[in-house]
Length: 398
Ligand code: CTP
Ligand code: MG
Image (tube, rainbow, N blue to C red; front, side, top):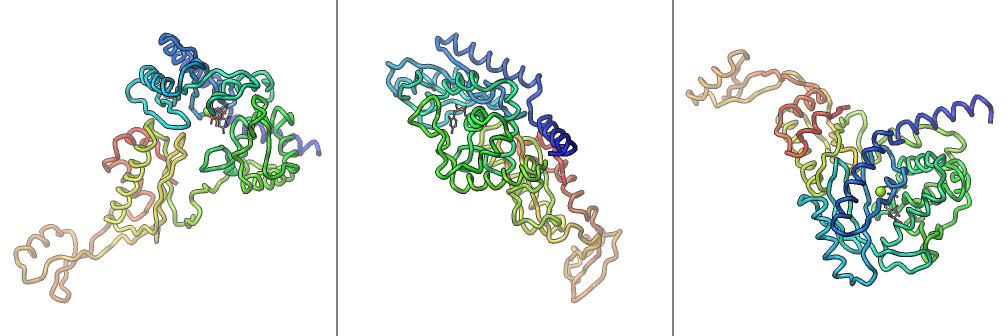
């Protein structure tokens, strides 16, 4: 590689990392929130550890989920574990915490602005069969802490962000892509972000990466054929012509099908509420705006609400026209209806009234004819659903 190209590549790498690497202050806050939770759990007589990306500083800045695993004795039956875990979770996270049901139930709540999950597990040793799917997580923690060098954490972050950018990050059903843990394993095996991309050419389907803490498990089991192919394609393209757009694509994937020129987007931070409320209030906000836009004379072709449930909420409105006429015709009463005619004339003194086909009309002027200005105005004046009142003040309209 030419010297020039190499230095501009390094600059781009640095620019991406500056955006996605959690600041020292954020790491400190994570540590404090985790220590506080673990201490509370300890007081109730249980041992707990922080696992997941927050526990090993491989989390993307702003991704504020803390996975705290609580150990229960192996001799305890499932039912007893579930009962105790739920009670413990509620005691530690407060009564606003919510119960979620995965393989076994866990409790999710908030501490110091962080989403905290208190997950029960059985303690497992390497080589042992796990009793539940989550039992491996504390071992993943140990494995990554031991094998991933401090200097390679940036490589994990770059890999995660690239996968996010192309829509292949996350093992959940919605994505069927690469989990955070798999990103760490790939970085450990190949040595750097760029080397993982180079190695990707040889990945075959089904993609198999044996979990080093449990040889019976494929750590890449969630990766679908489609997402593997996508990753291989983008990796090749990136190595040929690296660009910021791979990490931060301009087009929001959800806006496919919208006419960009006629669309206005409003984005704002995610309020701290449970998912069901987030989605229902976000939808209500969209409908409220939709109705008000219509009343104000705008013709909205389609509207969309979306959130990544972590950082950003998005509303989008595609307009028939972004600018509407200032003057519009306003219909009044029939000319014979004397009482209402008088009222109409009194109310429209400033406007020229005229008669047509037995009815009274007048031209009125709209205060706002620009869709974007209208939306900005509406956001300030409508009755925003309760949980959005604060975050909406940070709304960006574009
Ligand atoms: N885990 C796993 N396989 C998955 C999902 C999760 O083994 N498909 C385990 C890993 O030990 C992981 C932990 O559960 O570290 C926490 O899961 P999650 O929060 O989904 O992943 P993180 O590694 O924390 O990554 P992120 O930065 O996306 O939170
Ligand atoms: Mg996590």
